[in-house]
Length: 166
Image (cartoon, rainbow, N blue to C red):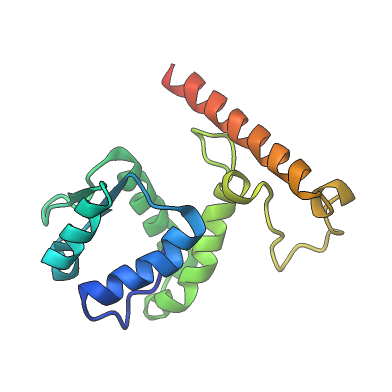
């Protein structure tokens, strides 16, 4: 979930982008962790999230990672960028969609699932894969079967998380 903020100038535009790219696909998060950009510190942004009953958390300049998960994601994405780009660091913006796709398709140690599996119930194929389409039961599920399939994955993820946190 990394929407482009390149042409966003103020808190109102940030909120519109957030609802269009995040909330529409994933719902309203319980908390939002962001940097101290003026867009996120504005009266509009704070009022919006207070009215929604949600918590805003801000990172600090000296310690931008505010939780362990953020630290792991930042470290992983930094490593992916470095190893993917090598000496072509000026092309990092062009590579971000591919790095995000790779990250979302990687199995995470805590859940034993990929982010794609947890959200959509399956892993999309990569452009390089020359394998046939997934089995018919994966591509032709009716709504109820698809919902049940996703519930099973989410239950398995919850079990894996429970085992890990014990």
